[in-house]
Length: 278
Image (cartoon, rainbow, N blue to C red; front, side, top):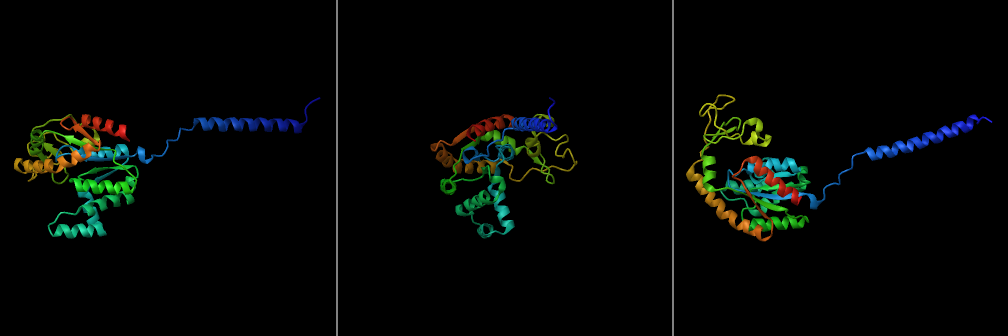
């Protein structure tokens, strides 16, 4: 006896339902595995230490972009707070206008403000230019502890003073664009350089002496890019940084990186440190 229309309809409905179940199952399997959101233990919170000209300005933006963290440079933070006329900015401006040094509490307050209000800091930060003294380091530790956060590491870019002086005293700048060149040093061709290096550290000799390759305008040497000034700045750096480095070394956070190598090699060594700790 031939099956009725009703039974055929029920059979087809059953097949459709089975197919829908199978389709949903396959769709679920085909979905990319969702990455767990970063927990504080997986975030990157680091301090970048190094003398002027060691490459912090080249590496810090790359750390920021690679690890999706904020780059907190103390000079930039001061200028931003003053421009925004925040309470901290007004306090800092008052001290600076009087010729004084901005206090540790104000600086730590600015860092805390960034961590709390800057969305770019949700995955962590790279701190550049702070702390410079042990009291500053202790205040920073206390602030992070109040947030139930810890530093992952403190990375020091190390380079011989004489090599650094040779690098910086040969530096030439195009004032309008910020492009920099070097009187003597030659690096890899532009096409072979990482974008971060191309943007912030164009350091081959200009094609025509003392002339910008792009505009043909004159290049200048910064007034503080001279041996006497640099020697004093480096002496101050070593005097200030030595105790701070020892402070973090005793905590097991200090990591030295050879900054005399090419920017790509330095970056590779930095990335290994950060991926291990994040």
